[in-house]
Image: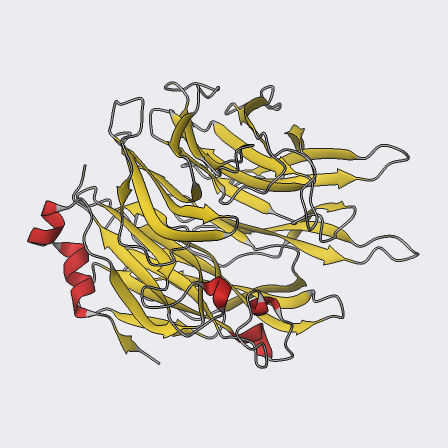
Amino acid sequence: MKRPALLSLFAVLVAASPAAAAAPWSSPADIGPPADYVLSPGLQFAHTGVGLATWQVRAQPTGAGGLPGAINVIQNTPNDGVTSRALALGVAGATVQELPDSIAAGPAFQDSGRGLVLRTLSLSSDADGNRRARIAWSAVGRNGRIGRARTITTATLGGTPTLAEDHSGNAVAAWSEIVHGGRGREAGYRIRAAWRPAGRGFGRPVTLRTTDAASYARNGAVEVAIGREGRAFVAFADLRLGRGKDRRRLLAWTRTPRRGFGAPMVAGPHSDAADIALAVSDRGRLFVAWGTQDGGEEANTPWILRAATLAPRARRFSTPQIVDRGTNDNRPAGGVRLAVEPRGRATLAWSSVRDNGGFPVFAATTGAGGARFGAPQQIAPMGALGGLAEREDGTAIVTYARVLGEQVTDQAHAALRLAGASQFAVPETLGGVDHALPPVVAFNAIGGRPTAVWPARPTGVDPSSGIARTAVLRVATRPAP
């Protein structure tokens, strides 16, 4: 069913109002109707200036009683009450699109303005709560409309699938599947990837690796990236169980439009659970960063962020660089993000942890074409990183939600680094206190204005006190810096 977009939203995204000119960011516009939960925001702009905002909507499980964490209650209902919504930005008369499944990855766009999203639909679950899902893809038209779902495969997913598309329409999707070992062996992960030649559908998935020990202590995270000329990358935190010593290595595979995936390359060590970020320069250098910590219900070792690079024709990664060594066993409040400008300068942003109970947000950059990150800059003392975007001229923006305490965030913020500058400026607020979750951000290719979207409860209560149907997606923009 279609729902009209708010009239104020189009004005916000096309022309700054006097109020927006006075303050850096426009007043947030809410995209409704409200829901029990709004999750997993996505945002990207095509070179044509058309953008697509996506988000998941999840219903409160029946009988959960509004208790915190009740969203994870296992139900026997199709797809566990998860649906998705999308709205084209900068398109006159655009309406909210409602999908019966989850937008798991994307949107990603090619230069022509067409794009892709990955979708998942839960089909069943086992006694351990592992869900068998259909993985599908949809084309996105130049007007931001999402087409029908086209199945790639079905699998018991070990993590969220990922997607990347190059400038001409070649694309790669990858994910981890939970497979049972048999004969008393633990279940493991199978890492799979599918390739899409420009203008066609995704081919049959290929298996890149079958690894040991799929469990709650590991997150099965897979990340992908693709260069301007179609060289694709897949990264996964691998584990091999040994007698007295386990081997934990971050592995990466590459392929080109003409050749399939090669043998895995080792980027560096990890500690079980990993948050991986990839980015590729126009000249083909791959940057990889991964924050890692022991898995499980509670952390027992400090969180460590490493980074490495792979030159365009190299077969080995550079020696891993420790960018940040957390000084506390807590989990970081947000994620790890990477972006690269055309000249090859990379920007890395991340959430960290400190002994004083802080959850700071940091950023670091390399030199033009460089392979090592410089000294970190603290963006905020308490934050959950949500997004990072970089414009072609080198202007960058970081978005985060302010952290009040462990797992509690309340307000969306952004910090800008102007082209040619070495430091990010003082952060700006995107709106008032609204129980914000970490925002994502993108630059509009036409005019260079940044836009941010985030889940919030502007008229709701603290979610830790119970859940009410007050969650919406909020959107704000500012003049081009």
